[in-house]
Image (tube, rainbow, N blue to C red; front, top):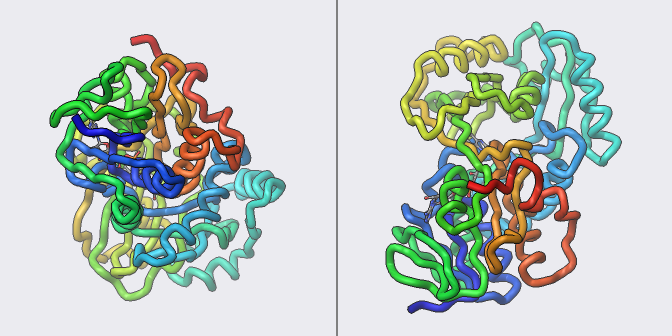
Amino acid sequence: MRVAEVVVIGAGVIGAACAEALSASGLRVTVLDRGPLAAGTSAAGEGNVLVSDKESGSELDLALSSLRLWPALVADDDVEWDPKGGLVVATGDPEPLRLFADAQREVGVDARWTSRAEALEMEPHLTRRITAAVFYPQDAQLQPVLATQALLAKVRRRGGVLRPGVTALGLDTTGLHTSEGVIACEHVVNACGPWAGDVSRALGAPIAIAPRRGMVLVTAPLPPTVHHKVYDADYVGAVASGEADLQTSTVVESTAAGTVLIGSSRERVGFDESIRVRVLRELARKAVALFPALTDVPVMRAYGGFRPYAPDHLPVIGADPRVPGLWHATGHEGAGIGLAAATGALLAELITGATPHLDPHPFRVDRPGVMTCT
Ligand SMILES: Cc1cc2nc3c(=O)[nH]c(=O)nc-3n(C[C@H](O)[C@H](O)[C@H](O)COP(=O)(O)OP(=O)(O)OC[C@H]3O[C@@H](n4cnc5c(N)ncnc54)[C@H](O)[C@@H]3O)c2cc1C
């Protein structure tokens, strides 16, 4: 039997951030994943670290905290950190975008109303049809797999153990039962992303986390065409919606390699991995409407992933009141890359009994609709 103080199940960006913060607090941490490290949803994320798409409230507080923490966490690593800023544009009535930005500004977000001419100067290939724009200098981007691996490397350097290819099966008073035997431990963290609902059931404490499918198109490397993270204001509505049916809204950004990522769709179709041409066509159509210069560029590939979806769109971070020693850190939906740094810090504070750096109450496990009985 192996012994650890904390076992983190799931080596995605959330599990890695939790393990990093726990090991920095001096705890002996084991991270296990049934697959390779950093190969789940975190390998499918576009890497946006955003405040622009979050309305004022607890998720925005978590995002602002994360934004402060990320640069120091990855300061010594090449994770393609790029504080490029985000440009949100309206192509119809600008009033909803103005009201949204005004409310964000009141809680400390740097949201700059930008004239049409200024927006076109920042993004010369943008459609001339825009009616308004808001620039968010705080928005940033990183490469999620590199960032996850960098956090896991810190855990290993502090003596933590990384165990890919090990599946968590159940939990009892002897410890965590896995495909490779029992690990005796004081705490177990369920950081299984879209599979956190299934894993919570296996651990005897079900929470309502479900997959929400997303797809992204990737162009071949292009000459500089898109300079910021650019999206249509209707993206915010798609993020906040709980509709099961297909929703697409245009999100466009370039990567360090010169490719342009075109996202994103949202659909609740379980773990269905099939590539749907209808979805890709819709993404391409909307991207070309925003950036006509993308009309004839070659698409190199398309890929998808499953966002970990909580019914009220808020992450679940905290102790499970039903099973002593069990913690959850999941449900970050389409923002887990951005929110990981603050999630790890908060979870470590809660486990070690330190004063939390932000109010953990909104993220508690026993909130309506999240803690389930089956
Ligand atoms: C198309 C798309 C675009 C996105 N873009 C962005 C973006 O730009 N910015 C952003 O912030 N977020 C984005 N997201 C969301 C982000 O990717 C997720 O919120 C985040 O990756 C979730 O990380 P995680 O660690 O919780 O889950 P994962 O990365 O999925 O990690 C969970 C791990 O748990 C493991 N696991 C499951 N069951 C078991 C078991 N029984 N035993 C052991 N291990 C197990 C899995 O193998 C997996 O590796 C995007 C998501 C998608 C799908």
